[in-house]
Length: 309
Ligand SMILES: Cc1cc2nc3c(=O)[nH]c(=O)nc-3n(C[C@H](O)[C@H](O)[C@H](O)COP(=O)(O)O)c2cc1C
Image 1 (cartoon, rainbow, N blue to C red):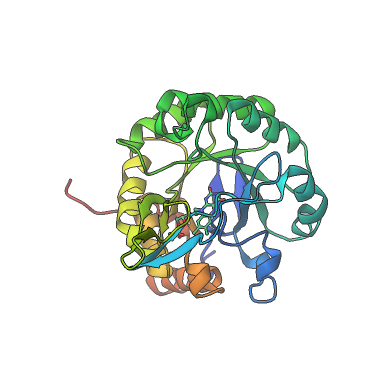
Image 2: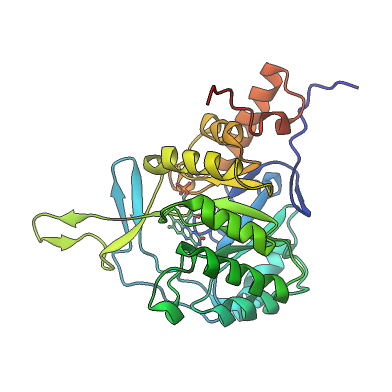
């Protein structure tokens, strides 16, 4: 039977979302901060701020600077740590009628494993998203995510310690993102999300000081969208597992580009700072687009790019 309502459900391995619009880690706190403005239950999923085993204070300020068509951040993954997350943040998230995805990171292999183990069997955590863009203290501070073998090892370590679906979030600061994607898929990841921020910097010409106390930071927002879109396109053609598109998605048209390029779902980050209701506006826009075009199922759009190459 045909209805006017398009089917927006998508599947990320074992995880089914009621729609493909998620929040991006670090841009939506623990959800509660947005609750007065956003009907959280309408979201496909909430990805919470990056969580570490122990609380982290992050970098000294200034930690954020605006750039042309984007922003640089060097928050330094400040967060409350596992214990406080479980005690103070998760209980209210658990009551929501949306999927809760916990973004995790570590400074060495065992930290990732211990964190995954600490979340094992925990009710209300629907999946893990693994940030592999962090410096690896065992490898002189080189990010885990720039080496295929290390990326695969982190993935395996986490999969051994968890009963949750595992999404690995890829760094764009690499030579060929497809090599990392293949390695992580081979290690057993259920889905991939990309991209994390691109490394950049900005300088105050009067003081000749870096605008971020940390000198460099992560670039996000519309400035990175074409890079993100191309990487999603490349990776979606390389792996069989679902790909989540992230990077400069400001409105529903941007989101549609990512679906057509091959993304199964999208995450909205920097846009939340400009318009706190960006996620829901994007969701409504996708629904309306499907209705207008007679698209019964949003999955019809995934990888539907028409190209002669
Ligand atoms: C202020 C800020 C904090 C972020 N914190 C995290 C984080 O904790 N973990 C993570 O994996 N990504 C983090 N990110 C990256 C975003 O989740 C996203 O991958 C990136 O910003 C690109 O999407 P956007 O252009 O829509 O913002 C952060 C981004 C920003 C702007």
